[in-house]
Length: 609
View 1: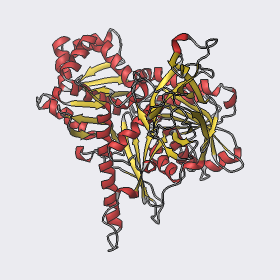
View 2: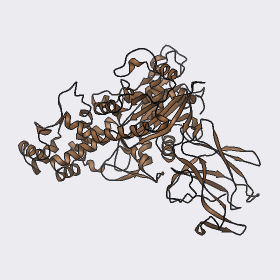
View 3: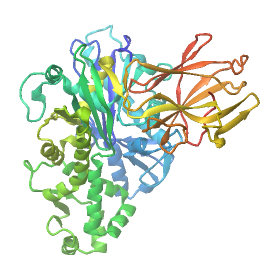
View 4: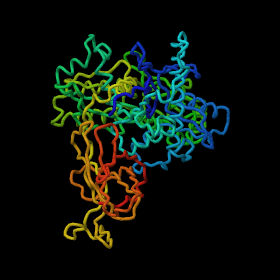
């Protein structure tokens, strides 16, 4: 990965999260090496935060209305004013689609709150467009303030002066990374002509960069001005980074090369859909039990924005600390919720009688507030907290990770007291380091990553990757249904050609190359489709354990005069945060970068050998 381009004068890092988003920036050539985190989210609603909900509101034609706190507030107000908000398309938690959708492509759709389907690419593009606009306005405003005494200063930064970073989960598939890059291009963040202007930084890696540079006193419950990095490098033992976000759990393990000080990945990224939103799901289950599934379903159907308001209020209240706050949390209930309960159940006493069928005194309603004891709040956290701890335990039980002594916890869900307690209980022999503001660790770290991307020198492959090819048909080993007959030769199609194997540690600049020939003399474009598997010995791309990565490399080959004798060498770098591909014409020596394309699973790969 290249060092920061000399023409970049400012770095902007966007943390595009499942539940919340934000950004930070640094002026590369400023005298003060300071990272600024945008703190003005919610100003229009009378609040000020460093992050805003990853929520988007579109009108029925798909035109942009609001993003973040403003989207949540407008959606709520439209319902209160009796405007037909069912025509509005409200999106949230849609980032999870990129992890879970197996057939991800540019035609993939996402469902709005009103059940209307809309192109996911357009949803991501509109969010990124807004974040880009807000970020560029922020850096230009600060630039003007700092340059007011310099008459020769430019009024604002040119697009090519900005280095962009977007953070993504390390556990994402190739297609999800490519989807995000394409969305960024469409939003005007970098372009295919200058792809290096956009870096996709892996979230736990960014957090590692940040945490290593902090003194111990910047972590909860720790003291001392010694920098963490110095202790880790001196000990020379691996450490774990656990990113607990709203949607996903992202874990990586690093170690330091004692010779040159570079960071090496010790274990491939691990995790899954173990984010803080699962606490919200448990809350929804509790509401269904307490008030009745029919009551809740009718309320959600009739007043979707009020339900969203209730969930947002729970999101705030669930962060309560038992040592600091009372022994229960109280959530204001929307008027329409009270009216719905009055209609189906009765007044407060009747409602509480209904609730006590399942919850003795742990859940109650009084004065239009929903009261939940801290013990019950802990019960809502327990399923996902247990899964997170189990996943970490599973990793630490592996032979290669027996010497991990330090664990960094970052991300918004790392602030949850119930998670912190369980981790401390389950891993008493580990040093647990949580920054004072864990939700901002990734923004800070992403900026650091942009300045020194080659500090992390090697990554471990989480899967075996390959491309689909053809080879000479051998009736002794190849099934007849794979035979492709040409006048000049018989081929076996759908061969899984391995490029790199699961568990291999790949250096940042290491290249894996394979040579191929076309099987059709007149073809003017050759495509290589990527596949992955958890197996080491896949034979065909149609094997049950093989998964299409939904990306292809398109290689133009307009000169067909040599027919079948056009040898091409595919060269792939797996050591970065994204795979990089280039193609060499073996005879001429011409080298060209190849672009990745998102394709649907149903699209067949081109045949070559």
